[in-house]
Amino acid sequence: MVVYKYTIQPQEVNKIEVPRYCKVLSVKEQRDEIVIYVLGDEKERREAMLEVLVLPTGFAIAQNLVTYTFLDTVNLKDGALMFHIFYKL
Image (cartoon, rainbow, N blue to C red; front, side, top):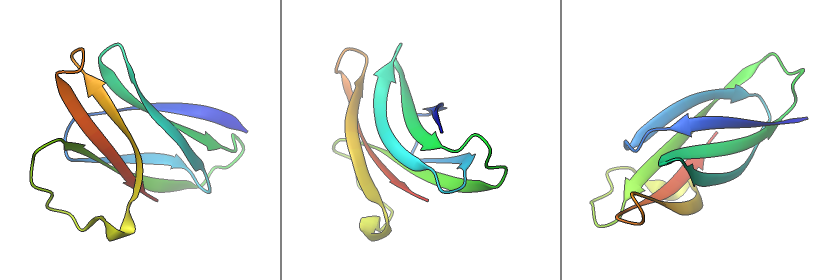
C-alpha cells in the first residue's frame, strides 16, 4: 500500500484518476494549495475516477450532495478563503 498525494484546484469540480479500490484519507492545505491524500495498492493497474467538489463558503451549491461524502474544510490565504471538500468514487 502507498499513500498518494494529489493537488486539487479551488474550482467546483476536480476529477482525479486514482488506484482502483483506494481509500480517501484526508485533505489539507500545503503551501497555499489544496492536497488530497488517498491510500491505494501500488500494484493496482486499474484506475478509478475520484470526483472532488471544492465548495467555497457562502456560495450556492449546484450539485446534489446526496451521493458525496464530506471530507473536511480547508483554508487558503491565511484563512481568507474557506473551502468545503466533498468526494465520491
